[in-house]
Image 1 (tube, one colour):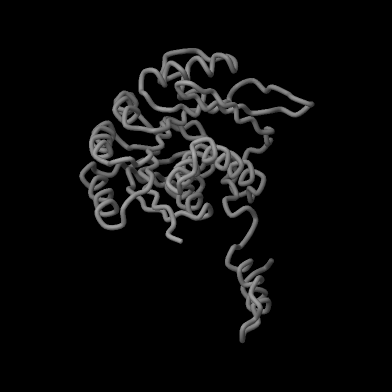
Image 2 (image 1 turned 180 degrees about the horizontal axis):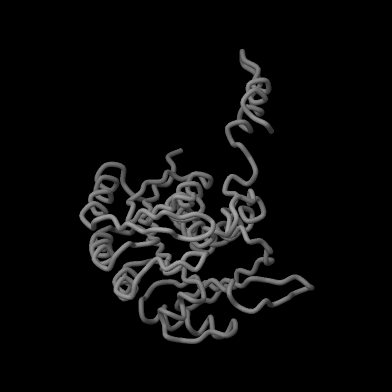
Length: 294
């Protein structure tokens, strides 16, 4: 079976928790084939962003053309965009694609609080939002994009509706920054999927952890993976939400700050594959034991 071909247009996180690195892990673990157009290189770890080097726009476009022209694309995910010039050029190129779902995560600030987009780049998001199929802002991003103050779930929905009406895209508004709402004594996070004639509430139990670096990148890439594989939007979001929750639960606890998630869900997939073999002339269990501490 041919895997879904997912093109990721985003920045590199040297610490491995977010950005292109999180996208590659997510798409791969969900069965897709991941290609990349890197927009920026960051010196970054769990404590913050120490440096950012945008990639020239022509090189971003060249990476995109290399993938589109040879391998082809079933879905696109956009993350950190690097510059206003790159945002406009990427939007123009993506507008030429036919029937390819585009998921735009309007990255402005890293989990650590470090700025990842200047005012000019954020202004250029407008063009990207108009070519997007789905936009996945968190609460601060949605406030910045709409000029609204969001204090509760109703406010989140109203702001998402306003952004949907302005852009024509479906909005997956992430409510993790809202005050905690408890149900059966469990704090819940509410993410709202807002379309023209539908609002779906994807609620999951809040997972208390400081190791949440890369959640937004992971969610958007997981949605793109689902859409590229032919899932309905609702099913793609449902699977993506479940994957993020599982990866948070499996976080390895690395770093001194906001650590990475556990995209492999605590497994070493190759060794699990070996363990399922029947030997067939070699001792799979012995091989796995030799190369794994598990």
